[in-house]
Length: 212
Image (cartoon, rainbow, N blue to C red):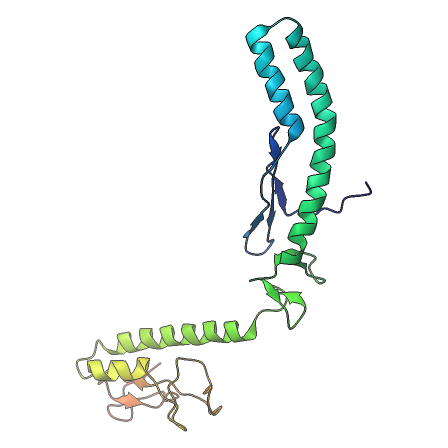
């Protein structure tokens, strides 16, 4: 048998009774475990140990010889099963050419860019996350403004369920409309009188209260 190619992101769960390996993603920590493969030498050694415990004498010497034979045979079997496990797990992982990490192909690999998602994030996912953050921030601002008695629950809902001022499409945050590309302006309310004011306004046009 030639050299066995191995990686650092695995755990060897093998015992005297058999062989099993876990291969893990460097990014998310998930992974795969190979099926347990019984070791014929381990089972034979266990049988000798049981016999020596019951009968003693010459079987005790046989058990020790069996252990030595088992050690050599077990190592050979271990290497063989490990090489097979590496080949079995390889299709489920990709090695990033930029950071050299091994990541799972299912969740942490950007197939379009040929890099892991740490080196080449999924732009659609990142955009969704930024829009969600913007929506949360808008909700906080609306909740702050709602302390004024003149801001109704309906006005609060209008901030959360905003629409594009140009095409009317529902938007959930971000700086531009996902339908027409028009810039979006979050609704603001005067902290003093509760009136709607332009986003960029420094003073309320109704009561003159500073908004800084």
